[in-house]
Length: 314
Image 1 (spheres, helix red, strand yellow):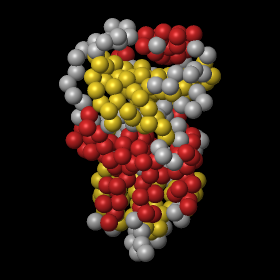
Image 2: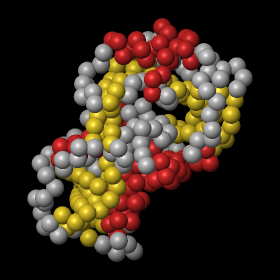
Image 3: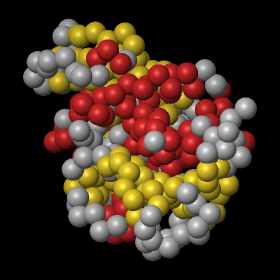
Image 4: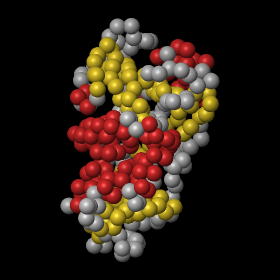
């Protein structure tokens, strides 16, 4: 029997907030989750999404958080309703690369140099999870609720005025943290993706920012991306970006040049100099921060959630 450790309030209804809420419930905390938006209206819903450390720091921590999350997502991939599939993936480079820090975290890593597309000279081949976010977030929401967690749609203006019943507050507000707590290190990284129809079953990546391209197969469609535009707050898709995405993706798979576009989507990644995961005491109460994951919110989610629990229990 799990002993009740206290009452925790998690702020933020995206993948970080839900994952953190679940881990806290599993470790004996009573949890309320407040958010201005819930799925399907969160930034997390728009994510491609795949396991891959991207636009996040510090590397020594993100590598560990990512490795732990990979193992959890792999376990969840055996659950049909979770929306996760372990997928053969190819990442392409125009220069020979050293081993990635995450090499030992993924399954079946190897290097390829023959028969590569465009002007690529090397490829990493590996297995990694693809996460269909609308499905996954629905599944996470049910898991959180089944564990006894409660929800409330609510917008907050600061972290100083909360009911005294809460022993700990956890800040998973992502990009909103910049304004809420005056963190000047937080900035948007605008992403645009295309939802298309195709029967390609493998994932293909170019993760270099100037030539960023990702081809992400899902059960009923495919996501093509992308862009990573720092300090761009625009949520409107542009034809220029769509053409740029199609050009980059078709250099990897030529038949994508004339693919049918179902939808154009834009989301703002919560960028920061480094992930902020730490505890501070505010007005005599613990406030744990868990935000600034850049383009790796899903990739780091469970590793970070475990560290939040450790800070809460400490």
